[in-house]
Image (cartoon, one colour):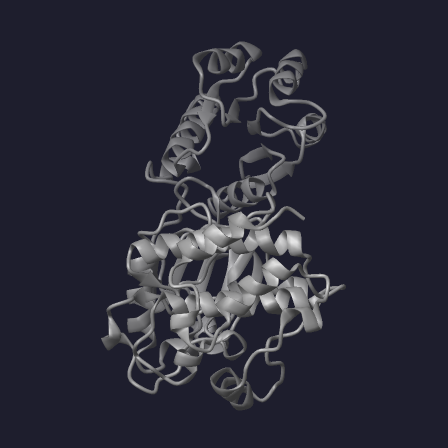
Length: 430
């Protein structure tokens, strides 16, 4: 009969990944969402090991441990307490409450594997299934190639809860080149955004080369207004990128919901934050080349972060883009990008930034339409209408900033993000 383990944690992500890892080893795993639920489940389930977080609602882990130790049915059940606190006093409090082991989050899989193995051995008095668990982590033995990877290559969709050691929690979104999943990374058990590259995009000429090059750049970028890229990898022929998980949504979703736009106060704040990210890039002689609402994420702290550096490159690296090869998103593309020029610099990103916030304020693009060729042509030849024609409540000062960002001649635009930030800071308060 499978050994029973109860996992109690108010974090859905941690419950999911621990349950998945332990279940793969053949354990019978139940989960609880708070301290009271842990007590009830422990009495019903009678586990042979309990893994429990300290900071939980209704009843914290310390008090739940004490109450378990007072019950004859749970008195000798091994308990591992988890906490983000690592002070000596906190550890002692856990041990004094009756816990057998204490782990500080984030912890490595190997730490948990070793403690689970030792405690179950101690309880049983002899070696059992867990002897097969490697100290390197809660991992399965090496297997033949994952059939789910074959199915991904056929369909472009992950159908398994496991991929390259990551535990897939849910799907966040899908684009033309990749599908993004919320996942738990296997080392520190932290949620990340796992971008799995479409097998259909990967076979396009030059795509993987550009992807590797841009990710080599983005991995080095550390800024509060930039979505972190941690690593890029390949698993059984499928390419993936691991990024910071932003607890929020991209700005293009605001365009899809009523009232379909943002107000000026929000626009000023988000514009300044993204401009600071572009300033950071400019200092490093980098350009983004695909600034758009879908690549600007608003966190739960209401802070804007610029992401998706799939088209980024060094500003002097003109060899990466062939003459006449158009990269970017048509509704936010600068005239020089629309013209297929190789001579692209930060002023092109600033134009795209202006086009983004024009759209976000007006509720429609600078040059709306579904005919992409016509949209691109208008960016090349037509003067953009004033934002005040579509959003009359926008202040004159902010309207002037957007007009300068959207100037057809790049020599007449802001020359650097720092110039833009200076003008934003000088605006009178709303």
